[in-house]
Image (tube, rainbow, N blue to C red; front, top):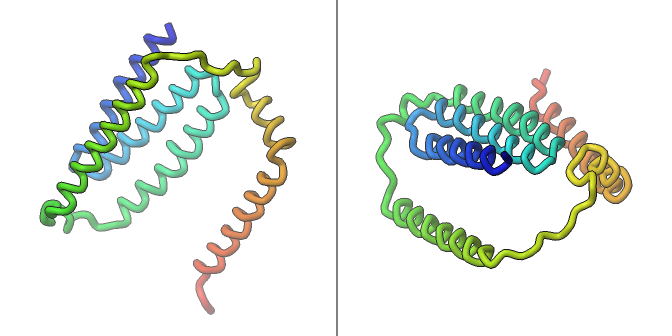
Length: 165
């Protein structure tokens, strides 16, 4: 049953990624990206990482995609439709990077064919309780430092955006 779910999610993920890459409309590309991010949450659910799936939906498919759509709508993309195609460097550089990525993916698949045992995980691995325990014991100081950094960044953004009187 898990394998069938994985195959369905994999086909949907590849199809939505192809729409993101090949469609001309940036709004449809952004919506396909949001769909792809929701599919990734489905992969997390198959791995019994419920908290990561929830974060994937809330943070990426929700908040980040709202920002992406806001920027797309803010920009006037009507002028971009008449732009010139990619130049020589962009075409060959993209082709070279695509070939390098395909080679790395083939190497990773080839090296994993031999198989091997995955390390054993604990009973509650990936659950909210296990993540919370690690977050507030092992990574407590890092968690507090990041939360302080986010508060300072938010205050800085408000001060920069504030109108001068």
